[in-house]
Length: 427
Image (cartoon, rainbow, N blue to C red; front, side, top):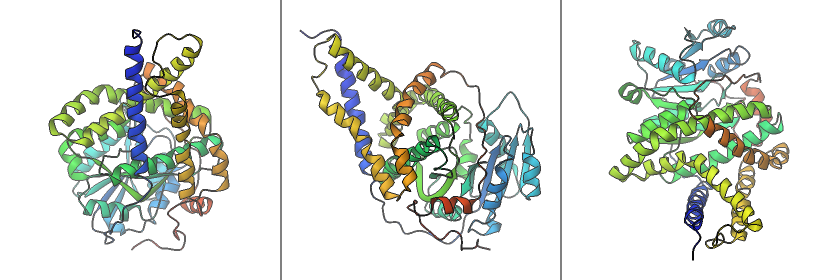
C-alpha cells in the first residue's frame, strides 16, 4: 500500500525531473551560435538613459566611454537621471556635457520609478528616438554596442538584452564567481533561448527597447526587479525579449559576500513578487494563444520555487536514510541518478570558461563556484519570506575603471577578442 507521503514526494520528483531535463536541453542549445548577416550601416537613433543615485565615483568613466562609441554622434544623446542624489553626480555629468535631470522623490524610490519619470520626459521631447538604451552608472560599454542594437532594431526586434560581462572579474572570489555565473547564464540561457526562438529576459542594464513599444504600452515597472517585471509585461502582450550576444556591457560585480547577499536577496524578492502577479496571467494567455514563449516565461518565473522544492526533496531524501517515512522515495530515479544531475551543473561552467578562454584566476575561482550556487538556497528562502517587502536598497559602486582598463584586464579571456584600443569612434 502506498504511504500517504507518496502522493507528495512522487509528484515532486516528477517536477524536478521535468525542470532538470528542460533546462539541460536548453543549455545544450547554447553551445553554438547561429550564423548572422549583420546590418552594419547606422540607421537608428538612440536615447541613452542612465539612472544614477550617488554615483560620483564611477559615472564619469561611463560617460567618457559613451563618447567613443563607434556610432555616429548625431544618432544618440545621453540622459542622466540624478535620482535623489546627495553627492556630485549631477555636477560631474553636467561638466561632461550630457543632459542631466535631477529627480527628488523619497516616496517613490528606486530605478524603476526613475526610469518611468525619464521616459515620460522623452515622450514629450521634440526629437523622437527609435530606441531607448539603459545603462547602470557603474557600467562600461563595448564601442560597438549601439551598432549591434541598431542591427537588431533594423531586423524588427523590439526588446533586446545585451551581453552582461564583468568589468572586475578578478578582484575577489565573490566578484569572480559572480562573473562566472553571468558568463554561464549568457551562454546556456540567453543565447540558448535566442537560438531556438524562446524569449530571453531583460537584465536591468545593457538593454534596448524600441520607443514605439514604450510609447504604446508604457513602462509601468517599478518593483524591486523592474527588468523582469517589464519582460513579463511585454511577454504577456506577445513581445519577446531577444538577445544580442555581441552587444557587450561590463558590469561591476560585488566585492564582498555581504554586498552579493543584499543584491541577490533583492533579486529574489522581486522574482517572487513578479511570479505571484504574472504566472496566472501568463498561463491563461499562453494556453489561449498556444504560445510556447509565454509558457516558457512561466517556467522562468517558477525557478525560485523549483529551488525551494528541490532543496526540500534533497533534505527529505537524506532524512529517509534515517527514518523511511514513505515507501517509494527511490521509485522514479535512484539516488545515483540524482547525484549525476547534481554533478552535471558543474560541467557547463567548465565548458563556458573554455569557450571564453578564461584567465587562470577565473579557473581558480571556479573552485569556489559551489559556494556561490548553494548560497542561493538561504537567499531564496529569505527572499520568499520577505517577498512582499518593497523597500529599495542602493548598491554602492566604487570600482573606478575606464574601458581601456577593462580590455587590458580581460584580453585573451573574452570570446569577442577585438582590437578595442586602436579604433576610433565613427564621426
